[in-house]
Length: 101
Image (cartoon, rainbow, N blue to C red):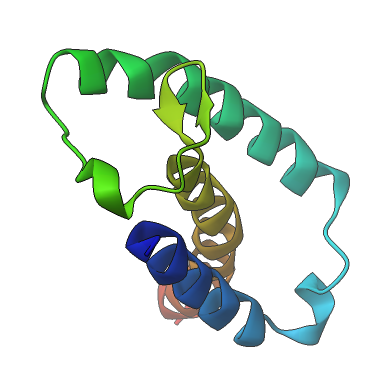
């Protein structure tokens, strides 16, 4: 059973469901940020896996690797590209209102 994949899909589905309507059609900046995070994941994940900083139960992986990083790790990049701007927008507006008062 590919447990990591199921867990990642649940988190990703939750993030997508909570997106406000204005984020349903991602701007160009989203795609650029996602590309950068994907490249960083391709570079650094194999390094931290090789150094045994992170270890995975091989029986719970899908078995697809990109430059030595399990495909499941790339779901974290997608999740971050969705959640970070969402939180920044949400809490940035609150802080901006507090600073103006």
